Length: 252
Image (cartoon, rainbow, N blue to C red; front, side):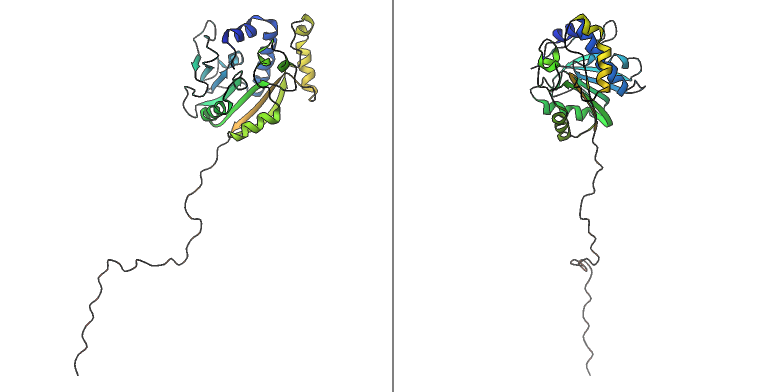
């Protein structure tokens, strides 16, 4: 079940823990995908907190928000780029998107397979998707005081297997949010330190799993028989041609 857009907005924009989470995930995303000119960047679920770095250089930025969640105008003080949509029918042409990020859209959906199909459809050839989901082994999925405590948490193997079934090729996997999901001032002040420690210790599980994947595009295959008949049968040879009339032999 999707969370309400007002609850998501309040967490990310009006709580210190939400701003810490927003900064940690966005910084890691920008490391993976530096802003480039001329790209179309889209986010599904409640991914708009991650899209701000792309507003200046991208050709187009779109924030897709599913109907059960609700929509809010974004970004504040600028031309709105967010749109309300059905979670299984996105108002984007096939192959339009260069970069797609999903956050609070897959794990809360009642039909994750259809969401993955739509994600695959809107990506162009060579496009990349970034899936941001609760980590099954992390602390954040065990507390419902944050949005990552709702929906289905994933392990890397589970999410990668599901992505492969829908035409994605997983490329990079990492965890974020190594700071505990606590409003205690000590943890909030030291959040950057724990993120640095978590990156240097791969065995330390973060609360959020991030997997980057690319769209598989297969080369078209030729139809028909692959073998060449060296001496084909001439079944209809001669059909439609005049048949010579036999001449009578002269009498002796």
